[in-house]
Amino acid sequence: MAGSVIGGNIGLSETDMVLFEGGYGKHRGDQAESKSSGWTQFRFRWFHLFDMNYDLEKGYRGWGTQVDMQMAGSLKGQNGQNVLIVGGMPTYALGGHWNLYLQLNVANTWDRHFDNWNGIGPGIVPQLIFAPDNWWTGAQLRITPSYIYWVAGEFEGDGAGELEINLGDNISPKVTWDITANKKFDEDLKSLRREPSTNLENDWNIFANVSVYF
Image 1 (cartoon, rainbow, N blue to C red):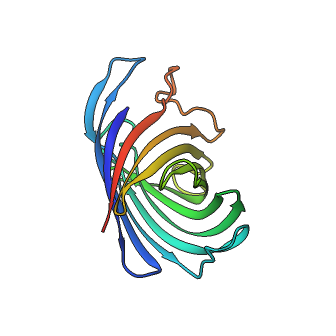
Image 2 (cartoon, helix red, strand yellow):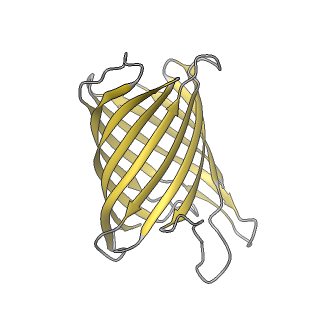
Image 3 (spheres, helix red, strand yellow):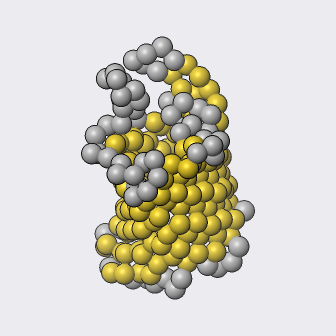
């Protein structure tokens, strides 16, 4: 799968930000005949920061809260669920240009057209960010595993995970690019199968993104 996403952030104040993104992509299967194009997932996120210590070289920096709505797209591999996430995020400086953003969330999920509520459960998203000063201006590497365990609804007792790796840079002070790769996993952290009765697995997805800041 390959595609492009256009997104941006709007700063409402020094402590509040809104993020939005969406895109269009193409899917071509290599284990079964399939070829399609369509919209990728859409996302709308509000984020609030409390007091943060950005000068700290190592230790606890502060925390923030978020409301994150992710809407299913029409592209294969991106057309699964609508997910509403609410949670908090303590932040730590690890030293050596590494930072940890530890998102602790509660997620609700519905079918693509909100026809059915599928479940609610806690999730964890530890985002490791490496921002070296000897690569290029604005260079940033993000490694983001995530896991949700459903405690109620049709998904009760199940879990789901994902690994995302992102490399980005600044084109200008208001425009950035990044390349994102992600792979989904089941509750046992095994590669998620597209069809339970076959050996077909959900392959790595790769996206090239451009974000504009207003």
